Image (cartoon, rainbow, N blue to C red; front, side, top):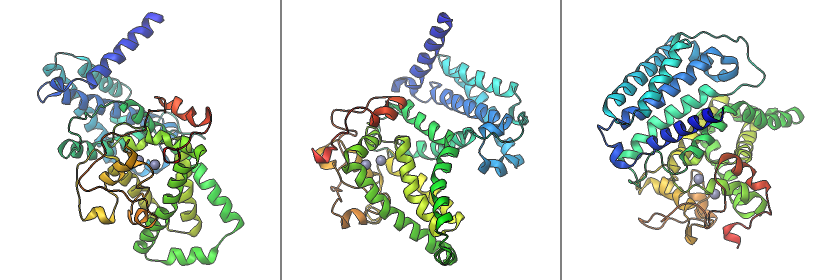
Length: 392
Ligand SMILES: [Zn+2]
Ligand SMILES: [Zn+2]
């Protein structure tokens, strides 16, 4: 048993070593790109097959239409074929066979348990289900959109895809995707309770009757105004700061960094945006569009992108603007709280965007937040509340 555990540990370290390989071993033709792609697609394919076998436990109701569409299975089939082909290519090109072997093994296992033709073995929906398919689709969509952009237009060209603490940030993605049911339930429960007490029929009817574009713009401005002050409170109040310090502990900015957020802070942000939207009667389609836009936008502003965007920068939050919010230096403390519109920071005196400059480093002075998801989850509950940097 002990020997098996240590073997597993060695294999994991070897795989990690390969993913984090030095630049010379990641060059085109070294079998690294094909190996990583094969591994990612193999794992994605396997997890999607598992969600087909037990949809009641590992798939979200929102993907039902997608899963019923025959092209979805064709897509999974191509993911598995691609994974197998790329992993084989890596085995041919690369001296170290770890990536290729893992990719082939994952693909074969996915094929063995049914592949794209897998049928549901468990019928009905369990009371508590995990958004495993949501996690895979989210990572594939976001990764394939942002990784090429970050390679071509990187602000920090030397920062690899598998940079320091990438496993922690990926784990944040995993938890928030798996727990999507719990998050949605906890967000809508207070909203529904409010409506049960105060139905607000007149206001809701008026809001629902507005053109969808007007509804969308109104949501963007109203939630931004609320979130500006919620965000600022997280920076000012010592007991809230320890929750938000987790988000600020990220030392690298990229498409994964924004996912690092304490579970209770995610809940607080969702509640302060979704509850008013729901209670005021905005159309569900507009609300869903807003949630999708906010997700994409939050990924974008954390991304390792060098875009200057001089005109857009004046109206909308850009990566450089939000990177300044994450800067480690004195001048970065308590600036740029806006989520979408820098106008709010200008109005309330917290705007900071020095011409052509970027922060030198990211994170918090002295790096007080421990590493690892569980330690970071417990961090706000341990010890005394911490004085936020701007208050010291
Ligand atoms: Zn902040
Ligand atoms: Zn951030």
